[in-house]
Image 1 (cartoon, helix red, strand yellow):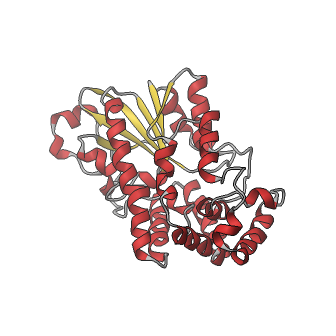
Image 2 (cartoon, one colour):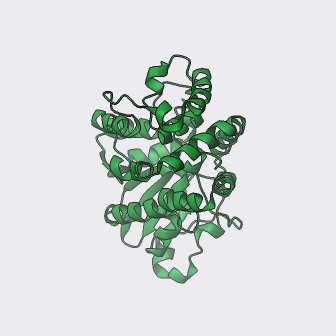
Image 3 (cartoon, one colour):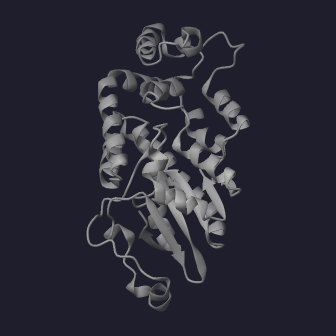
Length: 311
């Protein structure tokens, strides 16, 4: 697969036409005049969600990186957040959440057998060599505590360029400073359930894939950051589709895609609808979830929301 990292992005392949918006009056008067957002899509990450008789809400596609200028580069999303009644994120950041994530990703301290035992010493030494280049300060004993699926993701994760606080967390902090209610669309247990059910062989395949394509991973990460900086969802979509198609085991790739995109999107829509029906809701999720046939935008249109680009 071309990286779990890049699978945090997706968009709709149908692009063209104008990015014309509709007024609330026009939408309420003639629903048949509405053209789906996929046919009006232009570069952008922020989308306005409208329904007759309800104040508008906003959906914003994020990227899980600590690049320091992302808030400044997405000023309209910040304005939408600050004018909202409630802000919804995939997970609500907290010390308790971080401790829970650590429990999922690492073997218990009292467990003697770690990563080297799970994937074999030869593969472990290859992984450790790459890890020491990426994070030279990480002790080998600590790296050995990672579960194979978590270690594979860690090897693919781009190096920090800022203070380690990713965009989602920055926006949550901003909402809390503005006394805006914050809620999560998922729990950590739900978000990590896919990885926790992987077989030992599937986890080993993830590690082999990560090690075999380290140079490719770096190039893909660069392309993703460039596409996100340009708000180019079409390029992000193409990279994401290539990522799933490139995995050697198509059955596992489809299993992964179903959970990471389709199933999670379904759950998130169910949980955000009650808030959207009250209006003035700001939603920030990984750009992966926005577009595509099973994406949040297409599903929300089916639920009766009219969508326009707000960037």
